[in-house]
Length: 348
Ligand SMILES: Nc1ncnc2c1ncn2[C@@H]1O[C@H](COP(=O)(O)OP(=O)(O)OP(=O)(O)O)[C@@H](O)[C@H]1O
Ligand SMILES: [Mg+2]
Image 1: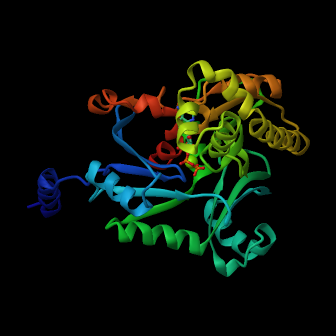
Image 2: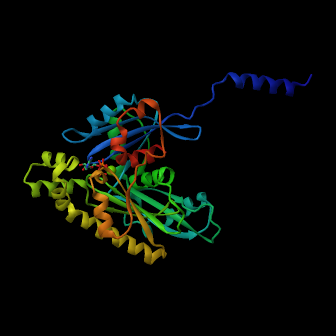
Image 3: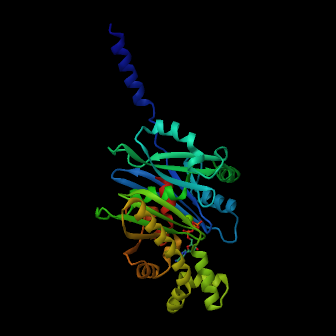
């Protein structure tokens, strides 16, 4: 008797009844300064599906309570949770290094941490990625990321205290890069670079992409809350009223735009510096800017950018290229689409 054949048949039979491990749902949770955004993503034939989503404002409430509300709404228990950190204490470096495997890169660059980051190597968590793994040049483009340990530990603690198990922590801009690469606008390959500006409540982040792969990142500490303050001053109203006027300016639009022009111009100055630096370093011109984040929802903001930056500026809706499961589609997620770039990138 051929026992081997018999055993193989037995294994085949057993395997048919053993449930296959499922790729569990992933939830990206972006904890901003103005609100928490969360999306549950699933893979379906032909693309990505948004199964559930939630947004919780952080005004007048603490982060832990808002996170618990998100957890209740999305029934968080066994899903893989991915969140992010940003701002001071996080750093991304782009460097060219001799081509090697990711495994070798991981072993090699940690000996030079103090060369790449202005932090004590013992005080950070760090990781790296090869941005052109298919490249044939002797040199490869590498992204190195570092985050102060206390920032990640604080994030883990927040989730633990909300009764949640956080699986991964990323940096906001890397999530944005993921989202832009997968769900970015369809643009013609012009050989030129594209830039994305995420305008958050407190912080904005400019990223420059070559062929949808990030090559430059910079945080700018001006956000949409600054616009609210300027509107409050110009129209002599309190912060709450200014926020509501900013969202629905109606016939006050011209006054609102005028009040916001100075902080927007400050942003533009920083962006121009970044683009000039990129041009000098890489010899690639940026020919288009996409705006995302809640700050991009200000009516007419792209016009102000376009006028003062002298290049086409568009609002990036990361939901355009994602499929929505019917209950999610019937919701109002489209209203907040611009704010979901980071959460989507985390889910991806
Ligand atoms: N319809 C709207 N029009 C204008 N501004 C808006 C609108 N909706 C939201 N905003 C502004 O967007 C900002 C919040 O955007 P977002 O959710 O991207 O920020 P965040 O991620 O919480 O902040 P950060 O990234 O700085 O931590 C707020 O300042 C809010 O006033
Ligand atoms: Mg944000």
